[in-house]
Length: 150
Image 1: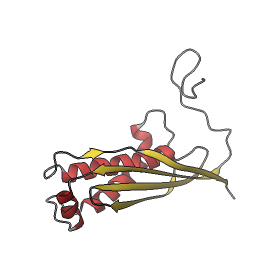
Image 2: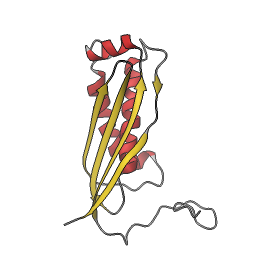
Image 3: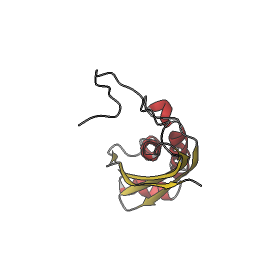
């Protein structure tokens, strides 16, 4: 299998996307963090000592998506049109969903995945004083779309 970021010589390279057509691109990723039910209760009531963890995680996820190219060496810098995060708080876990949109020559899946990852890490940080057994769960791409730009 030929890897797009590796030359035949074995050197890494950034993929040249200059020949690709500008398209509207959209990607959605999800992940989760398991928490103790008592931690979920504190989260829901916004009683964690560090403050409103879900709002903080939402902002951190958006910032993370915007900084993806700084974190992943061969990732292209993208002008994001939108990044959104949502949280589904269950009895013992929070499911995080991120959606990233841009008009460009390459996809935004890394930005959506980074947004989920950073949001999960932020929740971990916000809750670590009260919950020593949190587990960040499977982070995955669930959808990737592109449409011809007008």
